[in-house]
Length: 296
Length: 163
Ligand code: FES
Ligand code: FES
Image (cartoon, rainbow over all chains, first blue to last red; front, side, top):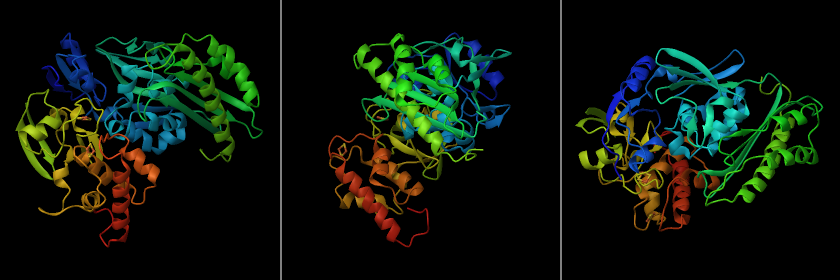
């Protein structure tokens, strides 16, 4: 299996990458290439020009400012997994990263690449949607910010034009002291595509009352789904399994669930409900275990 | 295109098509055939090499993307010609291979694991090699070989970090 012929351009700046992208109808960006290269090997993708942005140092920074954790689009997944800022400020991302592919692909794969790829089973898009993050996008000379809730349009489809380049990824930082996270996933083999995954982040006060809650489901729906109503229903309450179940049941029942050869609609719906519960309860237990101020 | 690659410490200049994977460049251009070709799309781990000491898939990198990266292949592990590294030796002794197809990838993965984590649990070993498929051994002896290598390294008087 060999890729079809293409031209290669290693970009020296984001502006140059955007120019190169616009210069050719079949140009595509490459960063980590951990999804694109196999697609090219199988000739499911045949770009005429590859524009490499992996070497742009301005796309490889990790910073926390203005209430957000801002990572460059080309930060490697393994780098983010080890980063103390990520752990402190986007604990749900840190929790989910070990589920992304496996170590050898995380050593090359990037955060922005996984988001641009928009696989419905992918963990990083799920975390971005769950936390209501956003991406910075550059197209030609124009820069814009796109909210995660607008970004994903369907399996492997984003709102972005083929000439657009994601430059940064923004995860909101929660200010509360006791923050806990939960992430649950099922797949055929370790590190394989998730049939269903669930992500939860909660902040509790000293009495165990939910101050803030974010909850999302991946793999089951065409795009990652944020369960905002459930999160809202649980805020201000002390979460028990019964309460979580009561809030989740109607929300999961209303979802438009995908079906494929690996998992039926009923299976995915059942698992989505259980995983959402488990992720929530795990997040609450994690937050309870945090001594106040441990993450500050 | 011309590209310069740093392989097992030596700088090599070569001419490749952009579509040549690092895997094909290593094998066909540099005759380093210890890196094996399995699936060519990132699934099997036979092509595992180390980039900056971390395992990656050589079939998922085009050679032109690898300019300047520090690459280690299985040929770069042994301390001297005719000798074996501690991990390689442990694989021989525990019968950590049958056909040997997965072995270079397994050994490099184990090498990277033990460098960062000299005393891994069985579960950590299993997680580390979960990206590598072996169709022969059933994995049992591979895990035992890595455990033996860890033991030997712990008992040796080599400076920390040298395997
Ligand atoms: S040949 Fe590279 S992973 Fe199979
Ligand atoms: S020894 Fe034959 S594939 Fe592992």
